[in-house]
Image 1 (cartoon, rainbow, N blue to C red):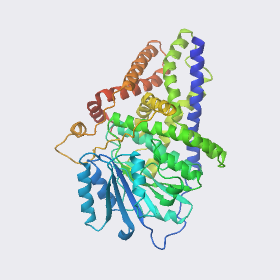
Image 2 (image 1 turned 90 degrees about the vertical axis):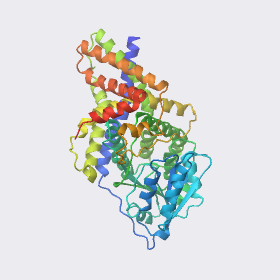
Image 3 (image 1 turned 180 degrees about the vertical axis):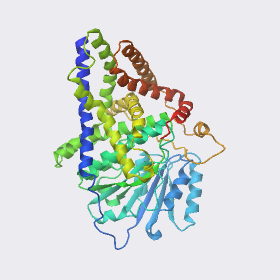
Image 4 (image 1 turned 120 degrees about the horizontal axis):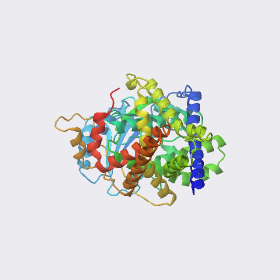
Length: 507
């Protein structure tokens, strides 16, 4: 039993180190190709018609803000259409209708389309809207996004190249400094958008439309088979189908579209669950086709890491079980804390995470004007917490992966938006969340498994301190804090969220 636990631990660490090594490779590709920007092939003699689709479902707090922002996009009014694709079942309907009427009075072609059923959820709404869309090109914005007025000016000319099927902008975050949770989310997303997207796109690998803040050639969507709703990440699914058809995508990291990050852990976990499960569903659906295709092997290999990255959460679950046991067994057998072959594997598997996200934050600070005031050392304050919260998602996301593998169906659960940045003197920050009718309620068996791991690692930290295993303590505390945070924040939600806001370091 002892030997099995030790060897299983080392084997898991070695496999996880492969995913860690991939992060270093992403940094390498980013550095190699970061200056290989995209320049439009030409300019349209006459600008084409563009439709902006706004898929919403029960978004009473932010729908007005969304429509008003999109209505300010600069583009010839006779070639500009807005579709509000509303599947709502509450008073969002009347709010959306009112703001559409107001915008229409300003001479803007805006259509309010309400479905009485949610067949296909967001994918179904987008596909339904395409049937009547006037535009040759279709931009999509989720309810929490606020595009700048120059969005189309900076994207549409890229379609003068007939091989370009989609242009994606980078996400920015209007409430990055709301709390520790939003700071950590922004770091996790920055790594994806600044490093991974740029590296994949500019090195000729596949990357994906992110469901919002992008614009499609309408014929590309049709050629790839349209919006399909057999996965929870319809955007990732369509992206790969389109690129397998030969369409090229463009990513513009210099073009940012701000959005609101979830401020409650329950909403964040629900979002991460959907993304993790959806990516594995797409892996199962698309990857066999990728392997049979004639695309280069470097693209096939990168697609495995892109679509299959969340498999690591299942491995991490077993690793979390074995790590404390491994430390106790090693101590009792009189072995060193770290075997001579552990150190390089440990660096690949764990230190790569900190290096990857630290580098991505430096890149974001360099590239984003709104971040110019930040010290380049500021990410160091949040990185340990971000790593811990990432670890705390292990059980939540492992469940998502297993459900995808078992082909268990689950509905598309939207991430509630609160409009938390709206100045509202009569409401405190706590009231903004408590009074929100869309508050997530995500206490389930996963929460109690997270609590078990929190106690498990708390004991292990105590054991390491008592046994003077000093090298292990900081590493173990990441696991302890991560599981304590996700379980306690899920159980006690809003009060702890506000506490974390008050305790957030000022940079």
